Length: 91
Image (tube, rainbow, N blue to C red; front, side, top):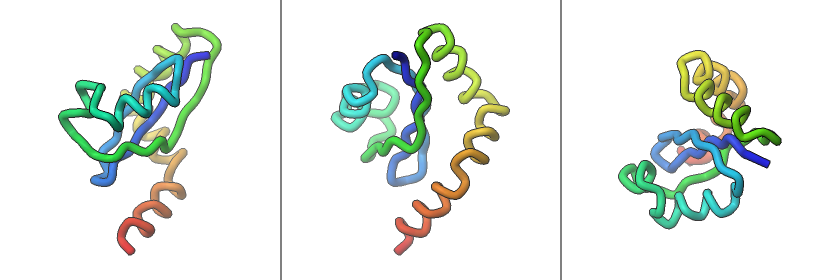
């Protein structure tokens, strides 16, 4: 299985990626072993993921979610969850 995932840190920054081992990859992000998220820093939380049997499908989906249309899709898909998190963080 291949996973496309979305992470969010405490400052509200997002990271979109793909992997074959989601638990390991999340741990790598949070221990600073991933170059792109290490520079940003923070405690990364998994907010969304999709799984696929085919690696090429997962890569294509990752590219889509990083595009303008994909970004709009994610905002709509996660709108209630993100509002809830923002209220929780503000308290």
